[in-house]
Every structure is written in structure tokens, then in C-alpha cells.
Image (cartoon, rainbow, N blue to C red):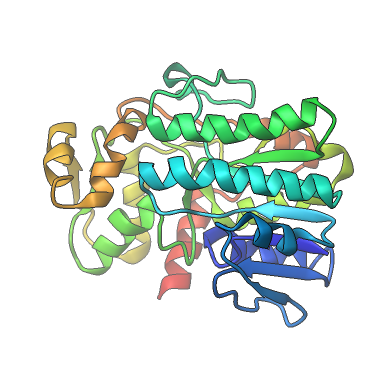
Length: 307
């Protein structure tokens, strides 16, 4: 049995499609899980309850933690450590391997222009401090020999069906409405984005590769990083709309954040847009001979899926 905690999220659904290549015993866990494959087992659960987490994990060989909590600092500080502790304890008790789908928030600000699995963990944000804490919880148990686990780390997302992606929200959807695309701070800085189908395929592969455990992996991401302006142009060309861009400066983000809660929450993350942001996945690509989807093909797939 392979179990996905957070099965209804952006990664959970595409991950289930990939896992069927390895097993027909897949358990989908969320508040209201929906089948992706005909043979999926549905397990409705409130993952804020540690006892329920244990029941959801019982009988599992591999557990994929891909939960996406609301993008609010207080929610993260309250819920993430609790869920991670419950997941680790349940995996340890039931001898299940853990795959944690992570982001890059814990990296030092000076690592952002070229991030690798060895980049220093020194988060400049409060949300980053939460991510560092929960990743460290895993690696501490691994080092102690109590847990078999790996961390699969991704850059910012884009891809078909990804409703919570910055790119989909501020570029694709704006172009659909014949509005200008939006970008933060500096559109002439490079910014890596991981294509969600690649992320899911790679996460399933890692989870089913015995010697991939007990370390950190960057998920495959096109190394030909685009600037914000170039990325927006890819969408405008594919959607056949005017290539118009509005750049939101940092001072305006703070003002808009008073009225738009999500922008208020994103304010502390703006350091990711005032400098180049390069996510190096060469370790994974070399190990698995994997060629990430190009940005040109990824944008085409995103637009085609949405029409």
C-alpha cells in the first residue's frame, strides 16, 4: 500500500496518476478524497488529529506527505509541526517509508541565485523558519536510524490544473480576461518554475527507488531559466494575446496586502523576486537520466489543458 496524505491537492492528484505505474494499492487521504484511479482506496480524514493520521498510515509501505495548508503564517506555525510529528511517529510505528514534498523557503537568501540540495538552511522569512523546522524533524529521525525518509524539494509550481500557482493566477488567468499579466518587483530577473507533471513523476520515482532514501532531492526543473518577462511572453504567444505586463513594486504589495490577505502573506517572500532565482536539479537528472519538460512545452501544455 502506498498512501498519499493530502490527496486532493495540486500534487496529490497528479502523483496518484503516476503511482499506478508502480502499484494498484493506493490510498488517498484527505477530508473529501476523490478517486483518480479505479482501484484507489479512499480514506476521508481530518489530519489535524494524530490518531487519525496513524490510522491513515497503518498498513502503508510508503507515505507521501503532500499536504498544502492555507498560506497563512499562523496556520503553518500551528499545524505543520503537529502534522509532521504525527506522520513521523506513525511511519516509525508502522515501518513505513516517508516521502515529504517540500519547497525552498528554508534556504539562505544568498543561495537563491543558485540553489542546490547543499544550500545552507538559514531562512530569511517566518514561513521559511517553519519549513526548516519540519524538514529538520525528518532528518533528525533519519540520522538517529529511526526513520527511512526522503525530502523531494520543488521550486515554485506551474502546470495544467494548478489553481494555486503564482503563474496561473497572475499571468494565465489575467491573459484569459484580456488583462495585463502581473509580476513582482523585477521581471528581468530569472526565476525557475517546476512543471507539476514532472514533479509528480519524479516524486513517484523517488518513492519507489530504495537507494533514493535518507537524503534530499531537487525535483527536475528546466535549467534554461526564463526571466519573468520572458516567461510572460511565452504565455502571451501561446494564448495569442497582447503581451502586456504590470510590475508590482514592493511598496505597492504592502498597501494592497491591507485589502488582499494573500498578498499580505506573500510580502515576506518578495526577496525571491528581486534577484535571480535558479533551482538546480542536476543531481536528480543525472541519477535518473531525466530530462525536465522545457518551459516552452510546459506553457503549451498548461494553456492546452485550460482551454
